[in-house]
Length: 151
Image (cartoon, rainbow, N blue to C red):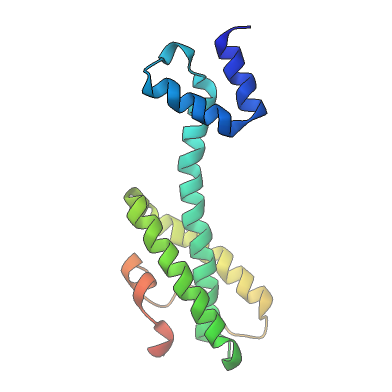
């Protein structure tokens, strides 16, 4: 069995061990024995995961902003505000760690808004919600402003 086949079977058997082996080969500049097929796949997956995390965290944030702004359940406000703070913090860390995600903010916001709106509308069918986000949607505004204090 060749070493490339060994690496491929290692990938399928234990991805952590495969990743450690791949890093060691990269550091040693042992490119001839790299499993390029899976290495490319994993690098692509890393980028996709970052984009998905941005959208996922925006969905949760927008759902809770919608609830806090439009659902009149004062006993739930504290929990919603806690979730808003948590997601804002996580989004700040994500954008600081992966600055290029900022260029995807608009498209990610649009995708997240559609899902968040649909989810909150299903959860609270009697509550009137705006079809479009009625406030500023820049990262700075979404991550910092307490919109419910402005209403």
